[in-house]
Length: 161
Image (cartoon, rainbow, N blue to C red):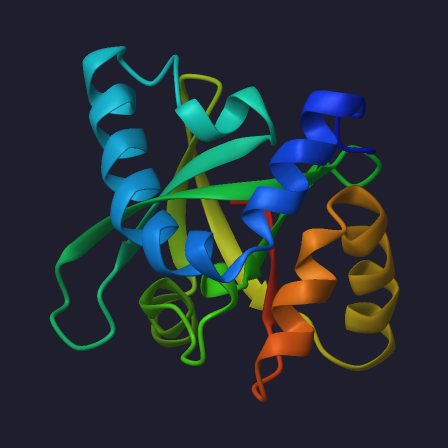
């Protein structure tokens, strides 16, 4: 699946690759997406206007409590799964939701206002490399995020349970 294209998309890609967005985006985008998702009964996430998005509910790795995180995703129509990219806006540490999925792979997503139970699997080896190449075609700013940090961005496949 290709991301949307056009002049507006290129501007958003450029902005989302900037160091300013790396600092501001994490403080603004997830809270706004959570608010809109809650207020519209799962029908709207601002991020979904540019990229497909899910709201992930996973069990906290340390707390054991439900953690709700809006995330961009790459739907894999061939397999009927979703790919999540732990870019953390190009910041150094892995996002907390990735640790949650490693500790508790059974989770759920809200996808187009439908709640779907899923099992997460961290991609590794050749499968990860093949999917990473598709991710970069899908949304090129992920290459900028990866180049900016030393850690390897975690990539998960979510499969229906």
